[in-house]
Amino acid sequence: MESNHTLREATLADAAALSALVTPLARHLLDPTTGASAHSFLATLVPDSFAERLGSAQFAHYLIEDDSRLCGMIAMREGSHVHHLFVSRTARRRGIARQLWEHALRIHGRQVYTVNSSEIAVPVYEQFGFFAKAAPQTVKGVRFVPMERPRLVRPVGLQDG
Image (cartoon, rainbow, N blue to C red; front, side):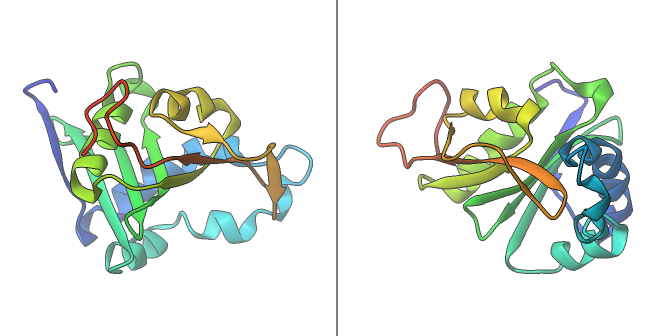
């Protein structure tokens, strides 16, 4: 990680910044034909919803800042489901997603992990050891690919916690 990057646990004070990062990036999850029905999903991206998750024991949020500017975040639900993993457009291709993922692995350990990935993020998750469990699905206007990463006995391609 570059010396001007800071990886830390998110706090309630980060709710608005997390919402501002994720909301425009999450638009690619909306199904073009039924995306108008995604109101309930979009409501989970407002600052109050982030604050609720940040205050919940079910979720852990980690973020990377570059000179106090939010570059990326990962949210884990119940320690085994990747609820969100987003990197700002300006910080992509710098290893931010991998740094966040490897940090989550160190914290949450070796186990089975799941994610509902956007179709464009599938190759990223495949690099992290995930595989598609089913064809792309659309639920309430949100299009995703259900993926799983098995519990590894030995690390494959990255440091596993």
